[in-house]
Length: 182
Image (cartoon, rainbow, N blue to C red; front, side, top):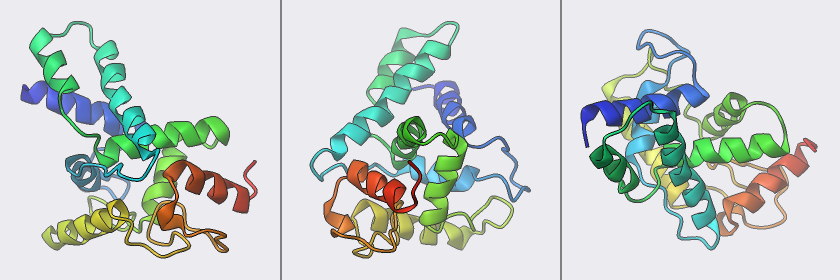
């Protein structure tokens, strides 16, 4: 795949959820998003494959925005393989916003706040940050967070069920219900 199509796709994803792309800004999260995009989403829990398919669908949406495409680039983009955490979270932000209209950017920010990634903005990013971010992403991906979802994207105050065993769709609904967002 050409670097242009890779960078174009990443930029397309990034600007869905952030408006500032500047390594000196506390409002820029290029490093965090790059690491999320390099980490494949584990959809091994039943029905989380739906979240992965939603993320992969973003590739088609990106292709549809291009004025012209090279067939090889299209094929390469479609064959990237498993959905990344970045793609999945963006697609999930769209789904969440359909249910509770706070904006895609708001939902995505809520996810990174809940994952405790918001402190890793580009201005404050240091090389050791990557190690910590990868640990957080791996814990999320492998559901090594608390029973109530703390450490994941949908922490609850009073979880009725172990959030680690529930698909993300049900976690999201419990999160919205507990916060009386409906």
